[in-house]
Length: 442
Image 1 (cartoon, rainbow, N blue to C red):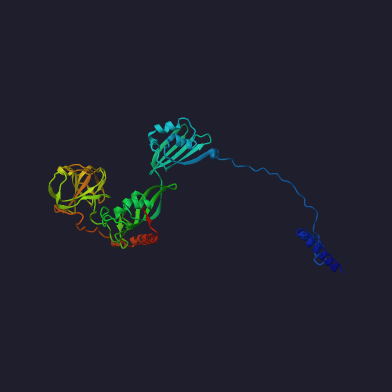
Image 2: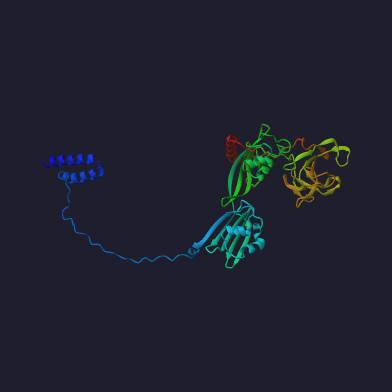
């Protein structure tokens, strides 16, 4: 009977609370009413002999020895700041933006020969400085090309030194399409001019970049970039490349054997070098070709032109087209400043009208293919700066643009397995770039 009355009472209370909309109060009240009633059927017990008195509480204070703070903690008010050099910046404005407030420091740096990297500030580069809370210079770092300028305070003195920056190498990939020039295409692909030169060097035995380049030609490259603390310092080696010229595909991968000898090979192991480069200049144009009858612009007469003239600015680097020995270096008649190299006993190459010779070029010295031997000029009988290049076999003039060039030595069989380990992933990267949308220079 008690349970039935309790249930009837609970139902009436719940019905009234629902009508009043007080849902939360309803739940609380129902719990308060029902729980004691439910206790009639649910048992709660306490174990015999349980002590129900309040437990004794006692406060304990114990001394804890704190470790001494290291001396470095005194540098807590030392700050590192970094700013990007802007156009028109001077040493003084740069120090001001770095929040260096130290009288005379700008004059000290301006007069220091060791801090010459700060004389000509290149917009876009960064300067990092460590300063005290009072604005005193503690240290400064400035990356200038591959050189790192370091300034550190020791007492009242500033120690200034410059040296090669420590770098890490990252691998980059890029591709592009020729619209006007290789340089414009590599710029559009985010590559440096140095990478354009490397691409031209690698494929120069198969492609004459003065005459053969076509609008719509495509290239891909896998190459190294050296970084210092996240900032690119310089372009490294070209690891692999593909160039599609006039519909024909050329590929190259860099491989260095265990003896330290390196070169570029096709993906199937063929040496892409020829015994001779097609051109002794990286980029130029043929201003006068090989001819048995040409009107000479200076002598004003018809005569044979037994070489090829490459128009280029004064000072352009001239490279040896093959390994050889310097047979002549000096001034000779209408050639002006001349270098003659002998190759494989029967062949000689001649480089005339030079403005000067590369350091160390002297008779009897051995030179390597691609080594700089001189610089374009207009010495001797010349109307303007250009290189006169001759190719002779047994002292008989040949057209260097048409003569068949013998191949370079192939990959040695003992290095084939190591080469395949290098070439396989490089080939996969080039295949990936081939499927990637090409960057086009506008």
